[in-house]
Image (tube, rainbow, N blue to C red; front, side):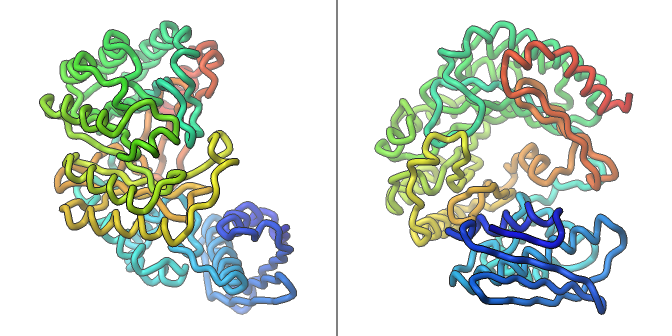
Length: 458
């Protein structure tokens, strides 16, 4: 149990507590005071008291709260690390986007490495962030980025054991599909006045390729009037067991420029354990089917899947590299409440997971890939991260925009979150749609009006 003298700090500090196994059962007392130009944080646990003093000044209340959170989390992290003997790869950083902190330092005219060192980030991860920032050059625009369009298709063949998204097997949701497609067409038609400079289109899921070719074509046809200047256009095709030449032909006809093949693993045993109904050979076949169409391809892998050995994961990385997709994203397993594996999965040995992450970084670098975006999630195994790697010249604009929050995001469909940026991203307002498909269908007209009010200032 944790208590603190500033209520707004409690959720921030709990994010640090959850990084350490067993820490939620500890009695932790935290107090912070500001005097003499410095914050003094005192943490008491297990009869031991830890104190840290950090000099600081601020420009406004928002900046003040940011600094209070930063140094309180650092003090708590140091105390927990001392008590448990555990050091974590991202230190006291708990945010989703470490690169945003780095960009903020650079835009203020300061190198970011000293702050990362102070927050106990490992040298390897500080170097990784520097490489990501380098990989974003030519895409990263803080002040005049424009807009991205996201279309949600929350339908899947089956639900994977690790998945916490709202998707359900298509057998249970197909009855909603005709009305859902009509709702998307209505939403997309209403989007035209809301888009300025369209940077990219992303059709995600779910597994969009679970739709039949004609159904997928309806969605792409509704997007067609909105697409500008041949901008990047991605369809998250998904699992290979729903790939067909007809669906790839529809994508090509409507100008799709990249697709995602979500392999997750090239181990048949692992695929069976996570509830996939296909084999590694099927993934390879999907690559072969897609290549003649000229799409850029992204391939997803997950480190830390239940029961998968270090050797099996390395085989997956090597196989993905041999298939030569333009992008390879290496995720770390993240088990949330909605995932069936959460309650039955034993924690992967941290040494094995760290070796997996290290191997992927070394192997992808050797193969000529560079990291260009990264993000973190709560409940990630080993407090690691997800990293997108790209061949030179093939970074995905949508991924950079979304992860760095440098462009408006106009999102339609169920469980879609639109974002409108103000003052270059200093303030972001969000508009979310219902997760439940029937509820979404009943509110489409209201959702359109709310989104217009946000984007047009009505």
